[in-house]
Amino acid sequence: MRNSIRIGITGGIGSGKSYVSRRLEERFGVPVYDCDSRAKALMQRSETIRDGLVQMVGDNVYDNAGMLNRTLLAGYIFGNPQHLAAVNALVHPCVKQDFLLWAKDRKERMVAVESAILFSSGMDSLVDVVIRVTAPDAIRVERVVARDGCTPQQVAARMQSQQEEKGAVRFELVNDGCRSVDAQLAEILDKMKENY
Image (cartoon, rainbow, N blue to C red; front, side, top):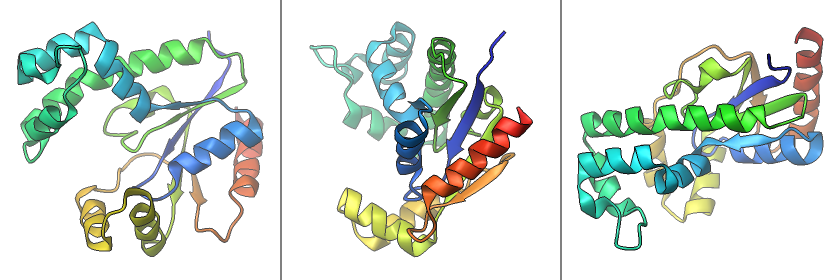
């Protein structure tokens, strides 16, 4: 039986999920599982994922050194919802299993998982409470332009294509540069300690 509270952190592109996750770790000592980076690592080392991707995309999806050909995979997925769904159906269960193993090894009272697709990947089923990080669209665009070096139009198009995830959110954290993220996190964590 587990004794840790599991927190899900989600939000749209440029909302500042990663910043909030970093503050959660650095300021409050809550370890955070980053789905994006862990999925990338699993796509490199998991035999289940490797075999599945080779079957779907072909032998060239991994090069001679065994490295994933991300460009080829992106081309396979882009504009093809069936291909994207098939890759997700292969990767998401492995990420969920990896998170459960990771969480089991933690000794802390609280652990967190950061995912832009917390609900559509099914990761929400593994957490007790969800925090959605929000920010005004203009700030989100500004952040992504600065981070990725793309145009505001490209960011706006990405934001439009990424439908806001629907699901049960317990807390909203506003990351607009005005309100203190640490103060909001402290308040949220206090409420969780009272209820869990």
